[in-house]
Structure formats: structure tokens, C-alpha cells
Image (cartoon, rainbow, N blue to C red; front, side, top):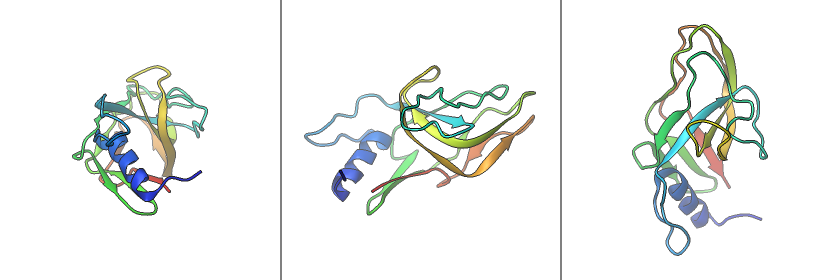
Length: 142
């Protein structure tokens, strides 16, 4: 099964920008939570699946709007961060992130909406502040 290009664009605008999808869905709920993972959380995973646990780690709240996320229609349709997303600075216990996720809860086993591999593994040790600058997180659907 595939989605039309128009449906892909509308889906991403709903998911990332909280834009209503006419005759399909309203834009209820305005925040998602960005997470880091030490391995692929996979389609059956939750936000807790392989979630990193470095000292001071917390998920990052990201408001669903056109300021934080841009949606570029086409084949594939792409959603990308328009602002930097910054995680807390690592304390004593390190970790290595290989994947990111976007889910519904600030903590616990929330629904994992989308996930993907990082371009390169991110070694996080004491004093390191993980951050993703503009366009470093890109989600594609086609």
C-alpha cells in the first residue's frame, strides 16, 4: 500500500505542524517528544525501547508547528527540523545514540510515532550536549 503525494504532505503537516487535514483529522494535541536510542527501536517498539540512559537525559518537548518543523512535498515528502533541538548535557554516565524517535509521552512507554537512524552514531559523555541543528533530523515517507 502506498499513499498519494498529497496524502503524504497532509499527513506530515498534521503530524509535525498540527495542521488539520480536511475531512480526515483535526489537529488535537500540540506537543511530541524527541528521544534518543542506543539501537533501532523497530516498528513494534515504544519510546522506551532501546532508549538511551545517560546521566541527566530527558526527552525534548517539541511543539507541533511550522516554526519547529518544515514539510517539503514531493516524492518523497520530507519533514525536517527548522530549529535546533537540544538535549540535556550528559553527567557522569555516558551512552551512544544510534537512532532518534518522536513519540507521545514525556516519559514512559509512549507511542513511538516515527523513528530513524542517525547519520552517524553519537557518543555522549560527560559535558557533551547532544543537539540537532536545522535540517539534521529528516523524516521521509514515500
